[in-house]
Image (cartoon, rainbow, N blue to C red; front, side, top):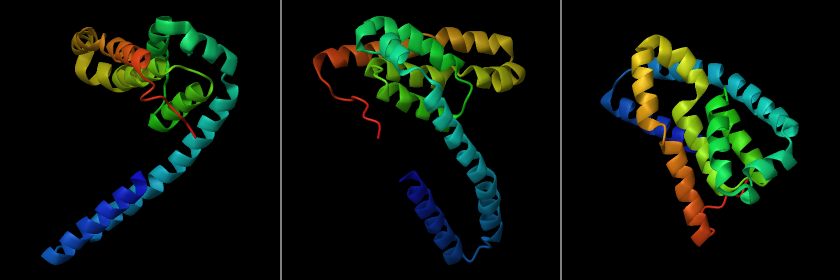
Length: 169
């Protein structure tokens, strides 16, 4: 679905460029370059995600991140989200595997939130070298509670209703 939205956006932008009489050749060239660079990466990432799905122990996931783990699944999911050294394709594939294996919605919310805010690979590769340890320390201290609050809110909402339950295909 997202691909079609981006494709429609490209068509609209090309239409605007044509109406203005602007040269859209550089835009098309850049699109083709990006497409040629990203598609092979996406394919490799999806294959890697499939392998990861087969390697993860489903019983352990259900025990540590499932409903029976209760609120104790939240800190573990936050730690796992911090340590996943991957982009969104693999991370969300892992989240889907967690969901299929019986992880609770609160654990999934915590995992994705933690990964979004604190992915260790982004901290090591970009943040620390470009912004420095002082900035990293301030950002971590100011945002450290966010994954826990998100997971706790999902846990509390889950006590009231089943709204938001993950149902991977």
